[in-house]
Image (cartoon, rainbow, N blue to C red; front, side, top):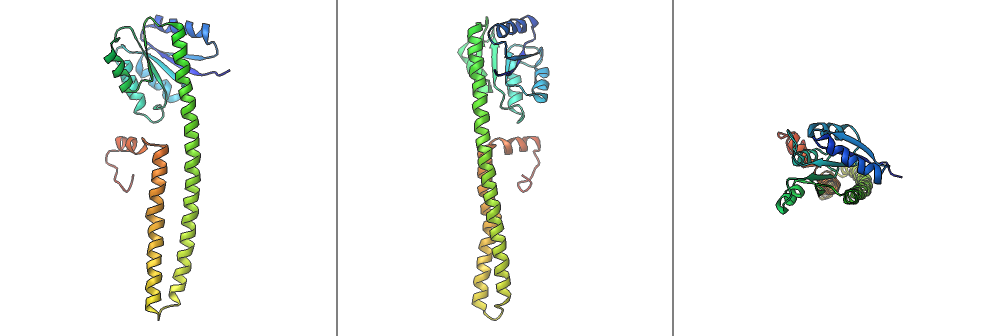
Length: 225
């Protein structure tokens, strides 16, 4: 039995109680949390593991769409799926706006309990697939990093041996120049090529890392990045 954590956000307490009753009836194993404001929901999502957020669209202060955008902008909470619930924004364009903002799904009020649970299960299943995929990618990144490290060490040791040989060939200009060219190639591959391979692998696992870093630190230099 999976004790998934679901955060219900609505400025109307009665609406929270209705969804809570549905879950208690159909999915009593879920652990439910409540927030009456978007800002409270963000604090909860940042401080504890939340598997899913179900949020009302029309709320004072921070709307459900604003909540989604804020969560997606923070790496720690960007993976949390959000289901938007509304009884006002019901058109097709509203649905498109919600999904474009980053919402995982969309429910119309009055909420049908069976549909609520079905869409909740779908969102939680997405989280599980995402976490497994991320774990595989992190493992691949670790293996690639270890391989690059070993290659770098080999290049460094080879360069040391060539430098030692170079000192024995002071009177042979052509041999000395050949060794220097080899050393330059090794240093380039160690410094540039391996880093490029690692950067590609890292971006595949964490595609938003550089973007989020430059947003948080807009004056960061390319070298620092």
